[in-house]
Image (cartoon, rainbow, N blue to C red; front, side, top):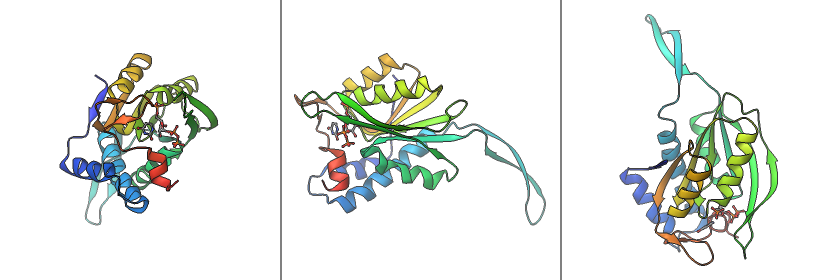
Length: 205
Ligand code: PRP
Ligand code: URA
């Protein structure tokens, strides 16, 4: 299984508040930020480091520094809600953007924007809060791999079993980090129990 589920009491607590339909956009954004921090920490647990000697005020110390560049790529629009958390943790991160929108009737993703930094020899975090049919994630992963990315983690807040299977089939080497694995998709391809339309709730649309 490529899926890594967050196993932390705070993640369960925050995700429950995100699901509650009366949670207003301001609180929704804060909760999204908290879960994104937890997801980013979990996904970057195995980042490579290299030796970095420093001088403390008292003596030399052989420390460690991050060894490779990190790139975060949100899938617009909802993925934007997860970016600042990663920039807070990794201030040197580069940010790329992939704009995708699901058609309301067919649930098929359509691409409308793409701007990416160089992707060779970097670690990429693809962030999008919802993994439903998996169509958007696979479309974004196809773009990233065509541009040379070889090490990609997908960070979601809620995933569906169908979405995980679709990503695994198309991109078996990609790891998926999620705060929750839900039951199923409904006829309109929304996640159940889910939390509704993430972008609409994040931006109050
Ligand atoms: C949502 C979500 C994902 C996509 C997931 O975006 O943010 O990008 O749906 O669905 P999928 O796995 O079935 O492709 P949406 O298309 O609603 O656009 P938005 O972020 O602009 O609201
Ligand atoms: N996109 C969302 O925002 N929510 C879902 O449940 C599915 C796709």
